[in-house]
Image (cartoon, rainbow, N blue to C red):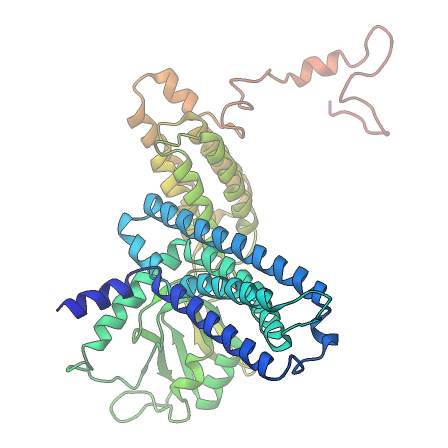
Length: 460
């Protein structure tokens, strides 16, 4: 039992792997130095290693850099642990400290430092001209490896601090424990009309052209079950195979013998989190998260929310006058070979406004901006796209009425204002076109602002 407790302490500690790397580096350096001595320091020519003075300078720089770099990496690791504890969960610390990639990076930097120090001791001045060439080459190789590892470490640390990175770190380890129990003792009945996913992850890219070609060759129609951005569990339905019109087997299932599951599963790519490759709603999701988080306590930053809603409004204006992504994909003969679900106009409007409307009902800059954005979209959208906007305006009015009791507050909160508070009709000077037209020519005869310019006459 003590031995198992010791092994557990080693596996969950930060120091064992770096320490082993440092010891391995010291042993390798001592071995190369011994080979250099036995060969009379002639294994590697001086043209590759440099003169003794050059070698001393280079090794000194190597040792100093590695000491600084090791301290920096340890500091970054501790900062990452503190950020993860405060942002996600204190129980995530053990997973970060036992990350083998971080431990190997620290160990490589420490090993490079030790090799540089041991090799530097063997270099003698210009009087004897002794340079351990093989050990110098080892130091050069480790230094190059350390530079590459530093770049990879920064990338790994950045990826690991993402919410998806930490979730996957814990999820993958737990998944490994479950699969180590043994194979499943119950397998659901296989349905040949369903193609299952081979790995978990978020769908981010679909090669529709090749899927249409594969369905055409098999004379069937494919239904993509998940929507772009959906998370797929391992073994979840990925495709449903539907027979071509008039072609079914005796049991009613599609007779698509020429369609191999591995042929089409590789045409759908998944990642550990949603990405912007084909996932338009994911951009909306990020902006909504920023906006909602900004008006939540303790941040209380409605200005940031206003900026995020501005971009949501801009994106909806682009979508309002464009056709939505197709749900059917046809082959050269016009036969539907692939169908998929996509977000509707109502879905985009709800994604953009529902959560912000509920969270910001008691924040006047947010409600005023939402009112302005919705009225602007109503002026732009086609008649068949008006209903979702009307629904948002009704719900916005109901939320404001619940948040305020005074009629003046309700009226002010529902006044359209692009700046939140700053450009609405109740806080800006009124424009009186008739008065401006009457005063078009002042006493000096100079035309007033908005009158005749470049041959353009003002409206009567």
